[in-house]
Length: 273
Length: 315
Image 1: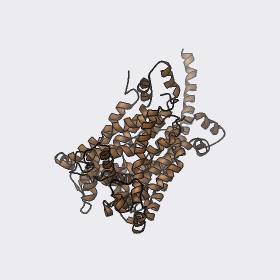
Image 2: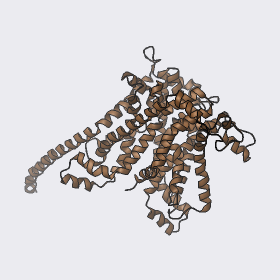
Image 3: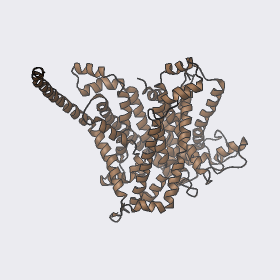
């Protein structure tokens, strides 16, 4: 329990098997996507494709606006992440560094809104976006997501632990709130900001239900919605479906494996005081 | 006494006046800064969360099919639910889906404690469980539908090691489909909750656990009596998120079973989607959403009672 002893051999074996169980399905998805159709349904199943083919990938990329879906996903996820960070930082600042009338009551309001998931609001949001003439646009998808208070909470948890003496010292030196935020708080909060960026990006990248309601024109689809359209078109043609799923999953997986050291560290470091 | 008190009074009053005025100005300034900094967040929260809640609750009292103007029906939708067998089926399945929460949280805690060690290559283990988290549920759902097909690789594996006598239609068998979908939820979510618990574990100083070991506690005792109680804030957070996700489960079902077979995986949110966006019965769908939101709030309140400070004792 002390975290000092390495794993006994049995545990290492068990953990290896479990980790493989978590990775193997993804491997199978990628393998299926590049197998010629007869190999896909061969018994016994072939672990690796005997004659890898790009046919399924070709179908997905040429018959469907897949590149456009990718672009849409990148735009939506980037906008959601950037705006959410910009909105959450000053909010978390005033909730932790300043005392003012109504603070605790207002914080409760934000806190209670955490219990209202986006999905519960889809019907009124649909009418609201319709009224604003925003259906089928990027803002329709990202505006409700940047309204989620999760970012404020994540940052607040971190800001709370930054000693108040640092603010006081800066104030004595004549710094205003903006400069304290920019020069004192933010440089110390990189792990929390990293965690927020990762959380929001993943959330927006994978968001499905509201996007499906807000986007009806195929050229505006994000990747998950496009993938669902593929399912509607090919049903159990698993070569094409797995090629599409692989292509949709690949950018996030590559990015994750590329950044994984800093990602997991960034997330776990938010608890350090 | 009187002579002492008299000269003090004006001084006190003056001090109070200066103090009040000074404080008020500073307070006013702080409040002005605070509300200025909060404006974007407040506007977004108001427009895209609270306004929809009010609007949705009001809509639940109307009949609205998008084409003809809304007609006020009062609480008729809520009364109609009592007789609506699809409502009870959907609610039942969503509640059953909550079974995934304790299993998922237990496994995530066990996993987090296990990988919270400086073993060589540990980051690859952590990464393995996190890969499904960064993959969209649609991709994951399609993938598992393929793996769980009757002639899929899961059946082949289980048949070849002798765990099954004949292939099982995991997603087609009315008695199994919901559990198969729950397994996929678990598979996708494990890494996410593992990280929440890793964060919680890092906030526990090793000295506390070491002190317990010095006092002669076994590993299990340290875990039960020290680690687990100290993890309570993480458990509260993770189980609240997980229970909310279970009650509003949709994507897994939509992609893998379409609510079938025989409505056995038909969930509350699926019903809201069908009634609202397929049948354009927006008033009734809004009423269903109100019920779902109520269930989420009630469950979160219970959860908070169990896991808040002092609400869960071991001794």
